[in-house]
Amino acid sequence: MASLDEIRQNRLEKKAHLEKEGINPYPATVDFDFSLREVLVNFEEGQAVKIVGRLMSWRSQGALVFFDLDDGTGRLQGLIKKEDVPEKDFQLFIETVDIGDFISVSGKLFITKRGEKTLAVSDWQMLAKSLRPLPEKWHGIKDAEERYRKRYLDLLMNPALKDLFIKKAKFWKVIRNFFDERNFLEVQTPILETTPSGADARPFLTHHNDFDLDLYLRIAVGELWQKKLLAAGFDKTFEIGRIFRNEGASAEHLQEFTNLEFYWAYADYKKGMLLVKELYKKIAEEVFGTTHFKIGQYEFDLADDWQEIDYREEVLKQTGVDIFNATEAEMKNKLDALGVKYTGETKARLADSLWKYCRTKIAGPAFVINHPKLVAPLAKLQTSANTGIIAETVEMFQPIIAGSEVGRGYSELNNPLDQKERFEKQQELLQAGDKEAMMPDWEFVEMLEYGMPPACGFGFGERLFWTLSGVSAREGTLFPLMRPKNH
Image 1 (cartoon, one colour):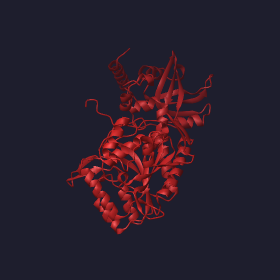
Image 2 (cartoon, one colour):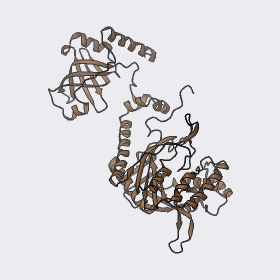
Image 3 (spheres, helix red, strand yellow):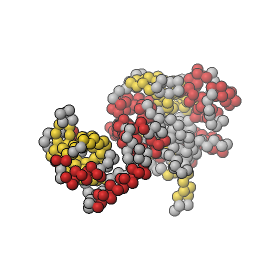
Image 4 (cartoon, helix red, strand yellow):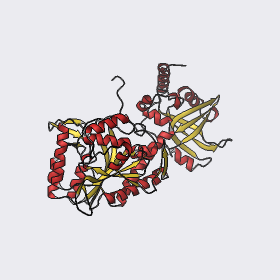
């Protein structure tokens, strides 16, 4: 078997052969009549057409060659016969064309005896000469890192993967249409921020040379900015955009991904839960064609009634730990006994680690509610309907499906004094070494002093798509971050 260097050298010689014949192997202008999808849908025997695409297979039988052409919209068989084209053109095709080349072909459509829609070629042109061979069989590349590094080959040779990303584009389109239809205004807020806030995450740091100013890449899709828009008089806003978190990668986590956040004036978390339930069902129906899913050990139906799960009670039921009354030492001992790895030793981090262990046991669909104040610095405190006494829990909700958190929302805190106090607590956590504590934004507190209406805010991201598709974060990302080979 020839080595890659030998194959590449052979193809370079074929490129030189074309150039010697006065043929540009990489012409700029391409003419064609129809996409292959259009040809296949409107197939008419005897019709003369000119089409383009990449040569994906080749079957030579002496004086004739069958090949498959793929233009990204479909695949069509071509047949070039020595008797149907000038002898020089046929010989040049045989001598210079390889699997992986982009070509254009002209001819007439017909159906073979086997019922295969085919183009009988009368003329051809090289559009881009490939110098490296495509994988003969996709399962010949077994290394996951190599697949991610050469994602273009992964997508080219794996139609199911290509379909996944077509579906992902539809996922975001359905979401955008959903909010457009409900009169939410799509906005764009800054990606570079002086204070990254709106989530518990470690940010990426960068530098603005002109201002000589350190900046951060945002960790949320404009949460505090969109709340400022509520104060400015907008009643419904949403944004779909990239966020960046400088933390570990896993099956559910990446450093860069797309999120959506919406903000709805004069609504609370209960109205938010109804809207989110409607949205997720819409996504399931329009993107996946079903509301019923079976993913690994989990089976659920998004059209079912959504269970409401109390955060504190669920942790107590599964672990025996009362997160409100347990000490940090007791919580750490339980996590160690459960074999759960955790980072951070504050009560907030330990409670969150216990909850993350518990959520993996929940198939859903469910909303987790009644979160402790310490894990939600931007959510409004709950009050008792009977006494009006403020509890130590907040008006927050998280959808859970297949053991994963696939969103977070709450009745937004709009009391500036309460917000200031909670930011001060986050500042203490940062100073104590908690790198994922939320950075206080004092300008946001100032805005609240001018007044912000009661509102519900909610955010979710690609994890919902990954979960419903049954793929990991990296598999569900077109070009996941890779270390350079020489790193």
